[in-house]
Image (cartoon, rainbow, N blue to C red; front, side, top):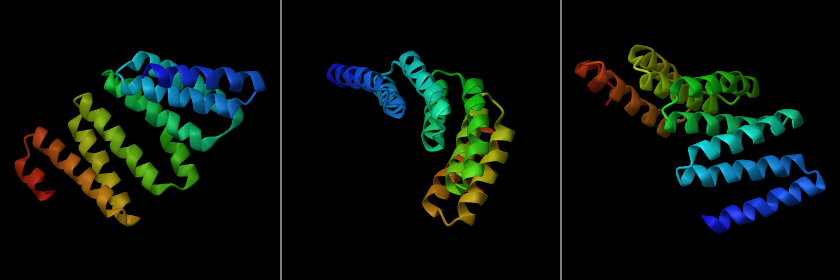
Length: 168
């Protein structure tokens, strides 16, 4: 952990010295991943947020998508489901614009998890259903199965055993 952070700091200094903004953003993203892996979510969030600012300056939509996912996951891990939704609300239009139907379905499923975390299980179930339909449309059967299991879990949380079993 310590050595990974040292190397990350060295890469960060180097990218700043040579003015390589995307390298700096990638390094900050990786740094955030290390921090998140060790439970330093505050540090990870700060690193991802700095990287997101840089990426938005440079226009790298692919990295922006990854950072928005990372920020949403980090917020969710800290119990900040509303903040996670804030990032997902930014992410979904980008995924749609990029034509990434599988990525969009993942984002929808993650959004459903956040709503579930907020206790809005009916809304979560509806969004899971949309994600499942989208995954089936593009032939992503294994991914659809994971979303179906989440939908079944939400239905069970609603007290709808028959609805849960219908998805198993």
